[in-house]
Image (cartoon, helix red, strand yellow):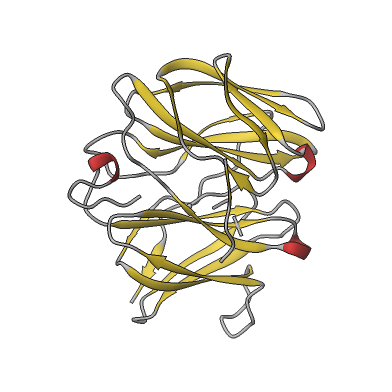
Length: 248
């Protein structure tokens, strides 16, 4: 497990050189996530130092965008309350230094009074044959540290709020994620993981209960990265936002 490094976290959130992650496509990719339980909907603005602007409006807690392709370079990522003009000071911002062939999730994590933007490195290297690769992103503050098992085998222990694990290889196929929080009821997520797929299990809290979504980061070799919601647990899964809109 590694601590998400602040430059928050939906969490709202792959890129490939010629021999890059998952061999999916040549390019650099970015997605956005809103994972702050008590922060209202936000607008996210991504601006490159060359002037290109990418905007995502009305991102709510638990939302994770699809990946969008970006050029390598340095970007500022800013969050504002939904509907606020661009002249309004952002509630939080960070800098992204995007390297060619890499993929990133820029996530708003933490409670509102301690909100930060954190950039996750999305490692989409394909797993060994017959396996899938999975990580856990913990955006459920009420649950405390959680332990996660995949189909009965320990995958991660004591994942704290605002933390993310590294990716681990697990057997592909049908199975169940068991999530055991420090506080509250455990949750189960039956799901099928495709061989060669790369996934993120994003934990959130809804109506006071632990919930979660499995997101397909990359569907396998030769496939462009996606990142949409696949399934939920412990309640209704949050919506997946659409593709980012790149403005001229």
